[in-house]
Structures are given as structure tokens and as C-alpha cells.
Image (cartoon, rainbow, N blue to C red; front, side, top):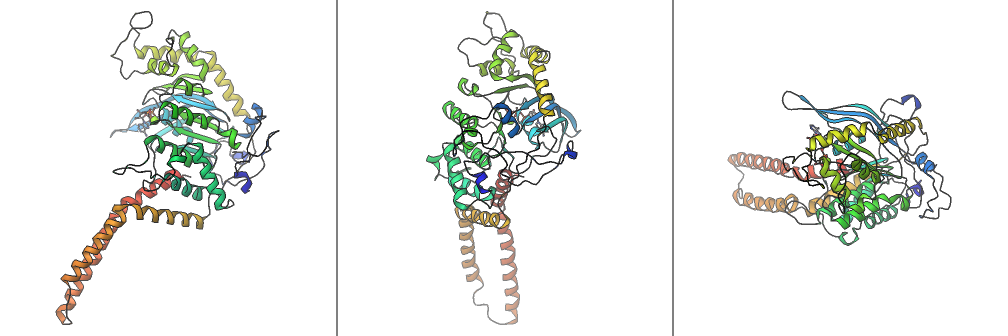
Amino acid sequence: MASLLSSNSPALSHYEINPSSRFEATTLEIEETCSAPKPKGTKGGETSGSWNNNEREEMGMCLTWKDVWVTASVGKNEMSKSILEGLTGYAKPGQLLAIMGPSGCGKSALLDTLAGRLGSNTRQTGEILINGRKQALAYGTSAYVTQDDTLLTTLTVGEAVHYSAQLQLPDTMSKEEKKERADFTIREMGLQDAINTRIGGWGVKGISGGQKRRVSICIEILTRPGLLFLDEPTSGLDSAASYYVMKRIATLDKKDDVHRTVIASIHQPSSEVFQLFDNLCLLSSGRTVYFGPASAAKEFFASNDFPCPPLMNPSDHLLKTINKDFDQDTELNLQGTETIPTEEAIRILVNSYKSSEMNQEVQKQVAILTEKSTSSTNKRRHAGFLNQCFALTKRSCVNMYRDLGYYWFRLAIYIALAISLATIFCDLGSSYRSIQERGSFLMFVSSFMTFMTIGGFPSFVEDMKSRCLNEKD
Ligand SMILES: Nc1ncnc2c1ncn2[C@@H]1O[C@H](COP(=O)(O)OP(=O)(O)OP(=O)(O)O)[C@@H](O)[C@H]1O
Ligand SMILES: [Mg+2]
């Protein structure tokens, strides 16, 4: 069992599900199995790449969504606001699907919908299937890197990833194997130089924003999930770092043999990063402007009279064409005439996509992937209760010890208070009057201790937040 999680194993990520529950969301217990065959020519951790496309699809997790609508109730009157409008698409194992669009177009909402993490004030309709079945995502099979980093600021990069490995990986792996996995993941994300640097946060400078993003990715990919959701993995990174991070994410399966399905929302990819995408989902105000091969997006825009100017990054052109937030700034196009309003451009593109062959092809693919329901399983476990208790206690102690406000500052207050109380209440004597004074002394100490306990709450909440978001499910 442990061998499955070693870097040499072709771990699969399937859900075991009762066929009768095909259209009922179920939370499934996950255990590890070693049923995956190795590809021909696989030696140790290296693969010869001899999996063919069909085998890859059979082994990994195919995600399909059809006519997905999401609305949210907002304001005091609970007005209904449309967030996603009839989206259809798919994501296949071994492929990277990029979700792009202007800010507020619904990228995170789509990721949340697919990962089943929508807020309670939202309503969702449509069909989302994993390997042709409707089922809840369970522990170890998927990971979600959120747009905001939730990390314990007092820990170093190495500690954060190592503690997470202790918590997330099963007891069947030895401590050394867990450490090895954590170190390998840290190296994968290019964080080896920052391994002993504190993460830092409010008021304490630590690693940079881009490094924090990479730590968050590290923590999520530790379990080698088959389905990886990344919300803005490259925000805060320069173009070179973005390229390396995305390239490593896109090629992770070559190193660990997990035929991952990766869905990432991304803001501003460079042309090199853009070339790494297999498929592109371009959104505008919750509607699909384009879904298909990333390499064909430029031609799609050109065929609708929105050609990409020479030497311009295609992703910049796509985003500029559909960003209506600054519509009053009309510009001249290539021919020197005024460009059409963005709202109109979006309408043209959305309608053109709806009637395009590309859309038909997507519908066809979704139908094929929906029919092809697979039954192979891969169950996973996290660390046992005692190991989790031990790791969490150790992590909390390190956190408290390093948090100046939480531990040391309060210790100083307690010492100061002890000295002042000792001087005020010294020599009370043993008369009847001293009973009353002893009573007030005890009351003062107990009420003060209670208030000081509340002072430690913010740090505890931080710890809980990090635990709940990082080791979700
Ligand atoms: N739970 C919710 N309740 C109300 N409105 C919501 C909710 N979730 C999302 N929205 C709205 O839906 C729209 C899309 O939000 P989303 O966070 O998906 O945008 P985004 O494309 O990820 O933007 P950014 O690139 O800035 O992260 C926004 O206008 C947002 O206010
Ligand atoms: Mg977002």
C-alpha cells in the first residue's frame, strides 16, 4: 500500500461507487489500492510515455459539466444574481484546462461549482459528472488551491509542508517516506532555497507572495490527487516563475505517474504559458465565449473579425477583446477605425461560439465521456487519529512558541501581574477580614485568567483556518 504513494507508483484516482447511485451525490470512503497497471517501459519513477490516450482516460478522472447555471441571492431582498449561464465543458486526464476571462467573469465560481464548494447562498443547476457518474469528491482524490493563501505565518516553508505531509499522508507510509515526499514536492515547486524561511504575514516579513502561492500548491499536491483545481496559481509570480510553475504542474504526471486532470483559472498568462494549455475556457460575465483547444482560440477570434495584432500575446488580445469594465476607453483598431463596443463584441463571439463546430465538438465529447463510465477504484486514507493529534499538537506548540503576541507577550503580562498581586496582597494575616481579601484575590485572578484566554483566540482561529482549508474533506 505504501508503495502506491511512493514516487514510482502509477497511482490511480478513481472513485468507487455503487452503480445504483449514479445520479446521487455520495461521500465515499477512500482507501488505497494498487490495482493500476504500469505502462510498458516504466522503470522506477520514469515513464516512457507509452500510455496511449485511451489508457490515460481510462485511468484518470474525466470531469464533464453540462448546462451548468449558478445563481446567488444577494442583498436584503435576496435578489437573484446570475453568476454562470449554461456552461458546458470537459476536462480529461493528462490535460490542462485553463479558465480565462476578465475579473469577475466567474472563473472562481466555475472552479467552486466543479469542486462542489459553492457558498450556501447560491443555487446550482446542470449536470456535473466524474467518470460518467454523479458523485461527491472525496479525500485524496482531488485538491483545490484557493485564490487566497491560508498558511500559518509562524512556520517555515519546510515545516508547513512537512506537517501537512504528516497529516495528509496515510499511516502506511513511514515518517521518512512522508518527509521524502514533502522534500520532493518542495523541490518540484522550486522552493528549496526558501525551505528555512518563515512564511510570515501581517507585520512580519517572510517569503514573497509568489512563494506563498507555491507553498499552497505544494501542500495540495502532496497526496498526488487525480483532479487538481488551481485558482490563480500564478498570481504574484513573474513571467519566468509563472512559466516554470505551470510547466511543472503540466508535466507532474511524467514524474509521479498520476494522470492528473488539471483545471486552472489564470489571469495573465505569457505566450509561453499559454502554449502549455491543452484546452481553454474563455468566460465573460458567466457565459462561454470560447471552449476548445487553446491553440485554436486565436483563429476563432480572427474568424469573427477580431484578429490578433502581430507580435501581441494571444491571451492579452483575447482578454482585451472581452473586457468590458473600461468600455468608455474606445480605441482604434488595426485599420484605424474605431473599435466596436465590447458588449457588442462579446455578444458576437458568444453567438458565434454557440453556432460553431467547436461547440458541437464539445457537446459530442461531453456525451462520449459521460457514457464511458469507469468502475476501477482508488481509495485513500489520511493519517490516523493519533498521528494527526501528535502532528497538530506539535505544530500548535511551534506556532504558539513563535507567536510573540500569543505566548511571550502574555507570559510577560502574567509575570507582571503576579508580581503586582503579590505585593498588593502580601501579608494578609489570618483574621476574619483576611478571608474576604483572599476571596477578592481569587475572584480577580480567575476573571483575569478568563479574559486572557480569549486573547489567544485569534491565533487559534488562524490555526483552525489553515487546518480546515488545507486539509479539507
Ligand atoms: N457566493 C456569492 N454570492 C454573491 N455573488 C457571488 C458569489 N460568488 C460569486 N459571486 C459573484 O459572481 C461574480 C464572479 O465571481 P468570481 O469570484 O467567480 O470572479 P473571478 O472571475 O474569479 O474574478 P477574479 O479574477 O477577480 O478572481 C462576481 O461578480 C461575484 O461578485
Ligand atoms: Mg477568482
